[in-house]
Length: 82
Image (cartoon, rainbow, N blue to C red; front, side):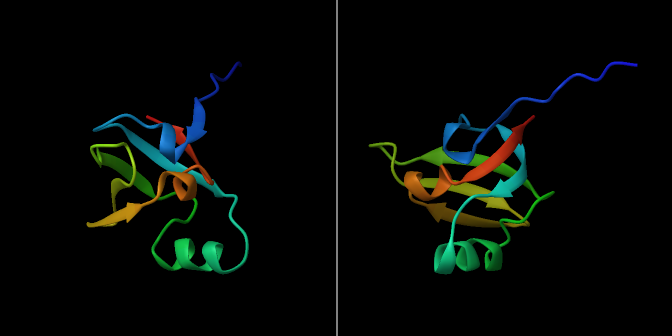
């Protein structure tokens, strides 16, 4: 039985209104603690809500609230695109 691999990307690469599931957080130290405390943990479904006019920051919906992240922070979060 063969399995089809799901596309893995970073949170910063998702398009507007695209969903994904968090796979891994590659941040270190205080930034990793901050992201985890905000709910960026493996298995959580997220939605890319919008980009700012100059594409930074980005707004993400997760666990019934909105979070704004810098694009360089979002690059540290691996997601499975849906």
